[in-house]
Image 1 (spheres, rainbow, N blue to C red):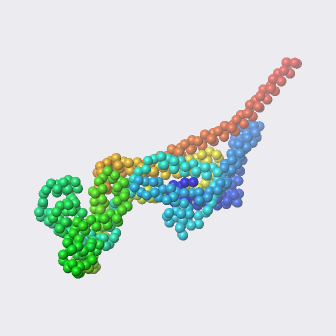
Image 2: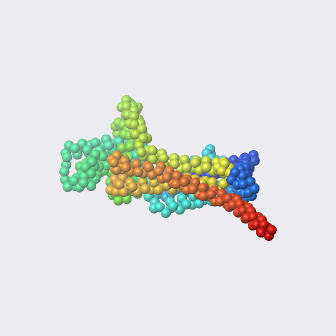
Image 3: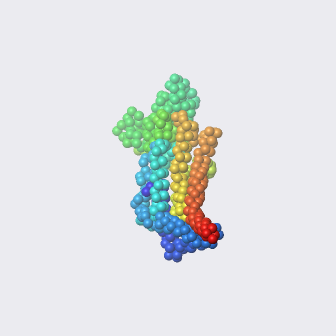
Length: 519
């Protein structure tokens, strides 16, 4: 049997474990027989209140027969745990999404999470017994959900992609220092030369047209890489590990006494840094390729590298002593670094506070917590079903209402999935240009973005609410119809008694008239 979240693997078993415990206590204390006493008393009172004294006995007997038959039937199919539900039969298969590797199937024995570990839900039962009726309702609901969602075309989780962009940064401290050194040795000098000379040519115009007017403002500028006189002539000030010594380039050393590594030109140096950054951002690179399939790979990768650089706080480094085989850098906890770290903490706190009240943050929290909330609600429904059945006095009509409630809660998964799927496609529809999702959607605060957030955010709440109300009303209507059918049966028995009595009285009157005529 498929479930709709990892947590539901365990709450399903525990919910029915609690059901068995509560039902066992009700049986042991004799409380399960109290509804029969209520049926008996109600039938007697109802019959004698509505029928004449001579007819009440037959009506009461007929009413008790019908009510007792329904009660025993309800107990048999919906109260007594009879069908085994094994833990090995439960599984959760995450929905496949574009740009994301397929997730393994989660089971109770291997949930792929910390659920069911050494401390959480580790005592979940191997098998529990479930009443036949509720087992059928669960099986149908789970199968219905999976069948509906499997027929919907897969899409990319664009909001998750945007969240990945917001938190993307360069974690490797060595790579961070290398980028800072490149910024100091190459970019500052190249940008200063460009701003002072302001060169113009057809090649420069073509680069600015292709990569934008802001291309010279970042360290991976294609203008500085492709136009002679910039990165091709500038070199690192210190020996860089990973770049072999070259006799044509590293003329500072004698050919017979040179270091293993040399000082690369900035073009070569940036190519190495560029590859290292993309290696660290490999997952984000794959997501961006799936999110922006029509975007040229070069500006797309530039965009995610820029995002990672912006999210990575700079580190102050001083130029150390340049020895033949390496260089030393000093990273003391001086005043400048302390001030900078404090400023970064303040800015980070402000950014976190701003993000925590944003729509995206609320939506992500809701989507993460919704399946957990649903799993806990289902566990509560399973565990409290004995009281629901008992208080209803084993009426078959209440089973229909309970089944619709259970089906409605299970259907939340489909409705949330529909809302999520619609959200992703609306993002594509409103931001269709190549690169617009990566560069514009994450920062767009126009009316278009506000409307999109309002519509999709409302769907997550409104759809389950409307469906629950709709199915609840349908269940109440069905329950009323079933109760009316039961009452019609009992009224039919009473009416038959009245017809029989009337026919008997009419026969007596005819006999008396015949006797009077003979006299």
